[in-house]
Length: 310
Image (cartoon, rainbow, N blue to C red; front, side):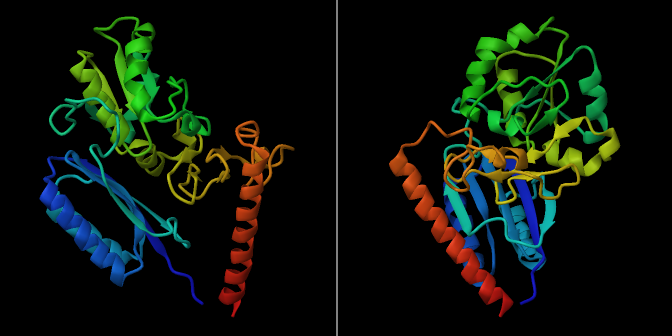
């Protein structure tokens, strides 16, 4: 069997998306999936679209052309990558209230957001003494890689970010009128929404990294990069290194936390059963279930390997 070369495209766009068009687009995409090897995760809402898809190039082209029609050719903030393996099991399409859940009403990034900063200007901005840099991602994402000297709000989900702003942001600002607030995330969607939230609250001098970390790593040579570590991604690759290749992390299938090669060498680690993050979170019965699940996964891998060899 010859391996495929999969194209992986992440994208998002904030725009008014009517409910009848959302349903229409979902049905068309499911038709494409039915006839092609298309996988990924897509989120549609009244505020726009957000997602990552994985397929061969010709299928990706069909999907992107379709998305462009429904987004009325607005900027999809696309980032492309390639893999020899599928990074999703199947295509999931979710219809939600928000394409990235903040849980605050009245936020409209399509009409009011901060200033985009391209990768080429990002280093200069975050080196500025009058700039504070905020990582708008979750704590487990920050733990495996972030920009030098950035602030970690230590949130478990993006819905906790507004409370962190209310409780802590002002303590980081020497001068509310003149301090630059620079924010970033994986692909740009969370930091864009965060800038809209801050503008609504009256903050000034707000910037966000256009295309997020993924675009920055694609644009900036490793020797000039101020990003340290790896970038967490929400697919089977878990994390990408500075060259946007699959990094050194895997997922603990018990708790979902990213674990490094070093973490896997710790005495607490048992593949598919527990890691040092979750050793006290589960009962012995839970771990027995996890162990049985891991045995089934291992058996399937052996069977699939035999089929592949044949």
